[in-house]
Image (cartoon, rainbow, N blue to C red; front, side, top):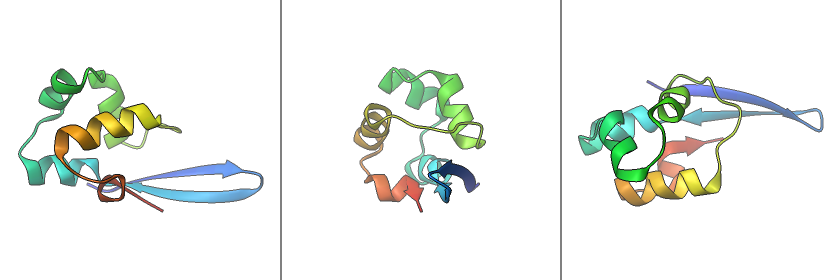
Length: 78
């Protein structure tokens, strides 16, 4: 599932695609396991997967990418 987030900043809309679900499927990792392995709350991961978030910290991105062995561009796209 690809999720879009639109953010308005200085009158410019940024449409960001989150491909976390695809990466989890590809790596065979569940949201529950990712939460346990990274210390990121399951609620935060679910919100990312369902487009119910307006921001993501660099720390969170780093933890996800380290655990999944991927780059930020593998899970986020503008």
